[in-house]
Length: 375
Image (cartoon, rainbow, N blue to C red):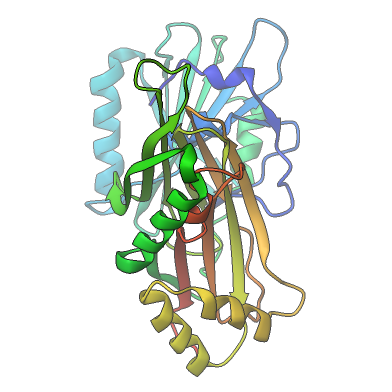
């Protein structure tokens, strides 16, 4: 994790007071005065980042890791080992103790910050076999945990589990075989006598735990100013990667969009659909999706909508040629009556030229179903 905190330059005011912010099974309720860190920095650190506005020359920063580790022992042994670890790291500078906040015990360690300016407070609590931690860094030599951090911890909740959902399908739809050849011929015909399409590639794979789509087209256009042979090369190369959370209404969808080469901006649209219908058509639509045909899902969304909860556009991100973007997309609460739902991610070329027809047949789908089967 980085502790240089470049995200201080790009802050947004926390606006989720009503619903709170989830970090795995822990929910926090930051006051609106807290400011969120830059989404790209939060994604890189895999943490919720908060800053409290303080006088010039003073800073108060909080980091809450999003992936609390599973305990490999009982809670008592974990806390004893954690105290030994802190002593090994910080020696006599470690002030280790316990805090009782909001009816919950937090093991705490005050120690010098890594930058050497000010102090850091690490507080850790155990819930349901996981260790949840909060790191507060104060640029002054604070003797106690700052009051606003104390208030943040006082509001921490571990809500009772709601009806369990599970991710049952995570796949890429892409043209193959004759369908791909037909699309490539159509792209070549659109290019016409102005040039020639020489190569193409569309594939899907897991890269670093992210479902990843990649596509490319290359060739040349005739251009008398391009040199002796009159050929000006072109290349379209794009990448869409996503890591979806285990449940459809917890955590964030992590996105990466790269317009690595091309002539027009590339956009990805993320939509969520909820299903409120019987089992038979749902199973048929899933079978079609496994054959890489998502048309039946769209028909179901129209035929069996959840009341007051139509398709929701969760995010739209656009990358210029040569640009790669990252974004974390929060997933909102599901309609109470939903019996299944899915996320659909579609890359779209903003231009009307190379690759438009190809991208119309490319996408990522993530399907969620309750533990109890749809009936």
